[in-house]
Image (cartoon, helix red, strand yellow):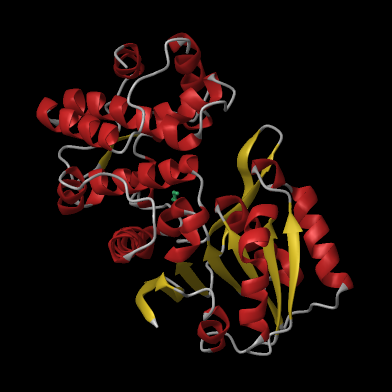
Length: 361
Ligand code: GLY
C-alpha cells in the first residue's frame, strides 16, 4: 500500500488519517485494524455514491462489515435536520444499533452530516471519514466539526465529534470538477499564509495547480493534513483562539457570500476575503505590501479570484459583516497576518479598516 499515516490527537481524541493512492480498495482492511464492530452505514451523496459507492461497499463487505449504503441529494440543502431524521430512521428500521458505525463518503456536506448522525444516533457511535474532494481531504474531514444548517444560517446546529479514522484516497480526485479543485486550493493557500511559509514559497515557485492524482498531490495533501492536525490538536473546541486562525479571510468572505446571496462559492469569497485581510494586516499587523503582492500573485497563479466582481455592492458587504453575530457580540476579532507563515487574532481592527479594504478590492 502506497500511503502515509498522520496521527491526529489532542485532549480526549486520537485517530489516524491515511493519505495515499488506491486506498478506497483497501478501506475495509484499514478500518478492520481500527474498528472492532461489524455493521456500518455508508452515507454518500448521489455523486460520491455513483463514483465510489460500489467500490467502498465491496471493500467493507470483504472484511465482513455488512455495509448498507444510504444516499442523500448532492448539495448544501442536504445539510438539514430533515435528512438527519431520515437517515437515523432508515438506520433504525434496518436494525442498526450501538454496535454499528457510520462511514461518510463524499465532500464537506456528506462529512458534516455523517459525523452529526454518528454523534446523535443512539447517543453516539463511531464514524469514519472517506473524503472525496480536495477541500474535505485538507480541511473539513479533520477536527470533528459536524452539524447541519437551519433556515436562518449555516452550521447553527452541531457538535464537535471526532472520527475514528480518515482515509484520503487521492485517486478519488480524478473525477473532481474544476470548481471543486478551486475550493480545495483556496484552503491550501490559506494554510500556507497562516502556518507554513515554506509551503507558500513552494506553491509560488510551482507550475500551478495540479488537477490529477500523483505523488506530488499526495505530498501536498499530507502537508495540509499535518497543518490542520496541529491546529486542532491544541484547540479542537476553538477556545484558545488557535483554531480561529483558520478563519483568515473568512470575515470579509462571509460578508461577500451573504451580500451576493451565496451565488459566489465559499472558496472564491474566502480568496477575495484573504486579499482584504492582507490589506488590513498591512495597517494593523506590519504585513508588507511586497508580501501582499506575493499572496495576490499566488492566488492568480492558481486561477483564484482576487477582486470583487464589479456588480457586487460594497455597502451590502459592510452591512452583512456589521450584522454578523460575532460583531454584534462585541469587539471585532479579526485574523491578521504579520508575515507569511504566521497569523494571530487582532482586536484592533475597526469597521473603517474593513470598509477601506473592501473599497480597494
Ligand atoms: N474549517 C475550519 C475549521 O475546521 O475550524
